[in-house]
Every structure is written in C-alpha cells, then in structure tokens.
Image (cartoon, rainbow, N blue to C red; front, top):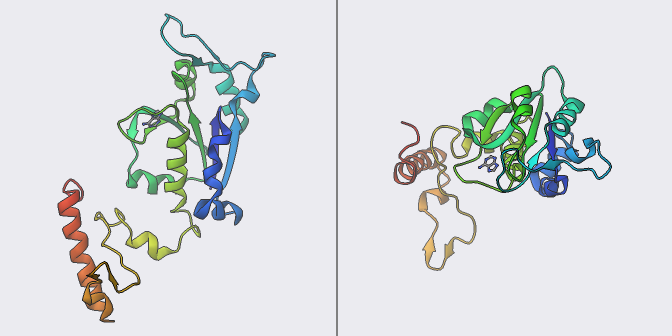
Length: 220
Ligand code: ADE
C-alpha cells in the first residue's frame, strides 16, 4: 500500500516514523511518499498561495501547483482523497474499504483552502475526520494513514484486528495486566481462572455492556 501525501508541510509527518507505522514502513508493508506542493511552484519566490478573489481573510492555495503535484504521482489505479471538514466523516467501515486500495493520494489543504477549480478538476473523494476545523489536512491525513495501515497485511497481528473496538460493531472489553491488585482493586476473578470459555463469555458480556453504556448509537 502506497500513500502519496501532497502537502505544504512534509515535516509535520514525522510522527509516522514512530512505533507501528514506522515499523510497517521499514518492513515495506506500507510506503509513505511525501510530496511538497511548494516544489511545483513556477515562480522564483516559490509562492504557492494568493489572496482570495472577492476579498476576505487568509490565503488560498493556487490550483496549478496542486495540479502539477498531483500529476507527478497520479496513476490509473490511484484513489484520490481530499481531507476537508466538508467531506464525509471517516469511520471504521471506510477505513477497511480504503485498506483494499493499492495506491492512495491524500491532498492536504492549509490556510483558507485550495482553489475550487483544482478540486473540480481532480474530483477527489472528500473525507473529514470529525465536525471540527483544524488548521490543515495534515493531521487528518495522518489519522487516515494510521487507521488504514492497521488493516494492511502484516502490519498488525490478526488477533488484534479482530478483537478491537468497532471490528464487530462493539467497543472493546476492558484489559488488565499485573499487578493482580492495584490500589485495592483486584483483577476480575474470571481472568485468572484459565477457563477460556468463561473468559470469552465474560469479555463478550462486557463489550456489550460498555457499548450500551458509552455508545448506544453503535450497532443499531
Ligand atoms: N481540514 C481541516 N479540518 C479538517 C477536518 N476536520 N477533517 C479533515 N480535514 C480537515
């Protein structure tokens, strides 16, 4: 799975070099290709933005630089996504769907956004990560890369994927580790019993109980 990320701030993607995603990149399970939109500026000062027609605050990213950056990585099988609060909200179903793609292009806006004409030309799928406004599409792009990569073969072990929150429509059951007693609170007895059938039953019940209490909107 290759992620091509079009951004004015490639340095913001450093966190993806850590932990599970960092390892997945090192092992060649995923590839993260950062494209600096500024490299496609034609003018000598490397300008990428300008004031909005019609007036108003902030700057708008020029259409030509975004289009040239896009053309430099676009392939017939590329899935193109624009991160914007106007998009459909990302959820686990969409994450799983995207994990089946081979090549994803993520377009990150910044400032007041991108000239509408290049969006109309490319017609990317628009995705939001939630109903709040961020300073740019970089954090949303990282959220998408992280959540999608977890479903790419070999990035996680299969059990983690199957047992986690959302994978079966329920939130995850609570987890415990040593010590057996913490601040006077004991680990639930059943988890110490070694009886796997009972443990599984208990976990299912807990998952159901937690989902009902915390996210009754799920699974109905
Ligand atoms: N850009 C700014 N805010 C965003 C959001 N909530 N989701 C996706 N892209 C964004």
